[in-house]
Image 1 (cartoon, one colour):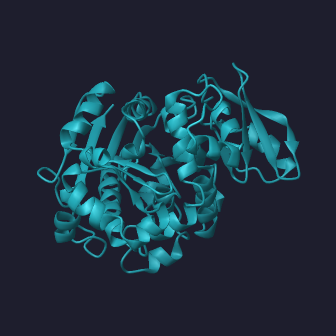
Image 2 (cartoon, one colour):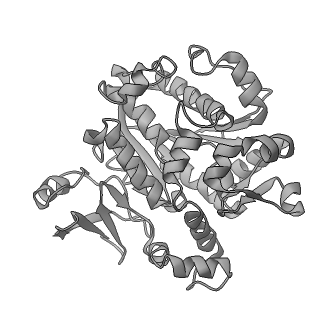
Image 3 (tube, one colour):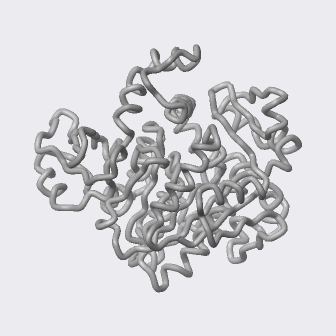
Length: 395
């Protein structure tokens, strides 16, 4: 699957495998022959059911048609959600997913700058993300020596892992980050990554986030890899399906980090997320989940983590006594966040029927060396470990 620019590119696109299957029935997709030339839009159809999808602006929108149609109603749907009116024949999970999509609207640009930018984001978020990034790259460094890998970010937001791992496969990309003494080692080109990191896939249910990540990839010199090796896809991770033939022979590393699991608004969606990650990782893969520790919810989460920069992005905290007791917060923009204990995360892994896992917290997490300029050992222990819970499983 390659990025489509003009009508003449259609023959090239059709000669490449589509790496994803239908989000409704998990059958293969095919490109329609007709191209909407005014905006280089191509439609895809499922080879089994009636579902159709759209590829335009450099990314595929794989939201299930039922949800996509509701999102397109924009203001009408927002009013229905706020007034808790019945919306078509949506299930509770579909309803909750749509609430999350609406909450992320108009947030992508600020979210990248204030929450996930490698040098400019608020330290309360950035220190945690830096540990996730060196943890993942440290794991990939070992795996890529002998194995070809497909990397999948479930809940990719504006694409921080797409940029980070893209910088490692392209020597002339992310130049400002490669030159910055603080970030240069982590974003350094690596021949091993260029050779063995076959696919970098970002999934997010917010089309705005995926659109912004596509623009960032071009801005940072990675446009040539769009939909060749780097795939930003608008989709719901809980019903995301790979074309396994297109990804055969690779070890899948599927991650869900920085509290994305806790942003799923009910236990069913959280378990479904883990089940989907397990499925995406099969037959050979690794899943990694990172969430916030509820021991620090009241003293750190409510008082410090959502500082000025983060609140400016996600909105002011709106919390009831019941939510506080359950380590749940909501913001004025509709963002939901559930914080977990180690036992909570272990229960979710069990419900998802994931075996051979390990859950790590401040007692078992170990500092990672070699990146002192990016995140010092004492910063890992002080700023990250007390509020981090990580789950990892080999599939």
